[in-house]
Image (cartoon, rainbow, N blue to C red; front, side, top):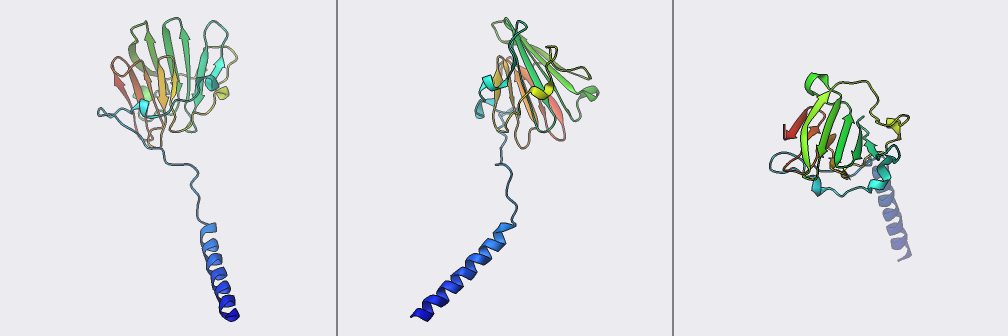
Amino acid sequence: MKRWAAALVVVLTMALAIIWLTNRDAPQSAHESVPTHLGPDGVPDFAAYPAVDPTAYVLRTGEGFPVQGFRTPDGFVCMTTQHRAMYALDCRGPFVAAPNDANLAHLFSYGTTNGAIPMSFSRTEEPLSPVDGLSEDEAPMLPAGQRFDVGNATCIRTDDVLLACRMADPQKGNGFIATATDTRSFGRT
């Protein structure tokens, strides 16, 4: 009986060693998959993602209006400002196939009716910050699968969408979707 138990221990030890050796070099996933939830119009369902704590994204509170913003690992940086009933969101980044080789998207809304003016793409090398001395590098990273939701601006990023932002509500608003292969606008034009 002792020989049988000893043999069993040896066999189990070898089996566990083989399992350990086989799995120790297996690549571990750096992050969990973040799916893209799309509405019937092909625009991300922004409400499907949990909102981040907006206080973690406050960059400046002085100068008469707050500045909030974020960065992404793909090289996008966005900053939003609010003054009275006007909201602006500017995002700079590698917008693939954007009009006129644009690197800047500008969204703006106004008034108590949450109306948005048509968004625009442009190219600039000027700093994004509306506040002197504020560096784009100060903006924290926006986690994938979470929603930046400040004022009238809403943005998300997923595995398939490098960055998608909307200004104002789904009916009256507009925005953009940037992927690794394309950039397009949606909503009011």
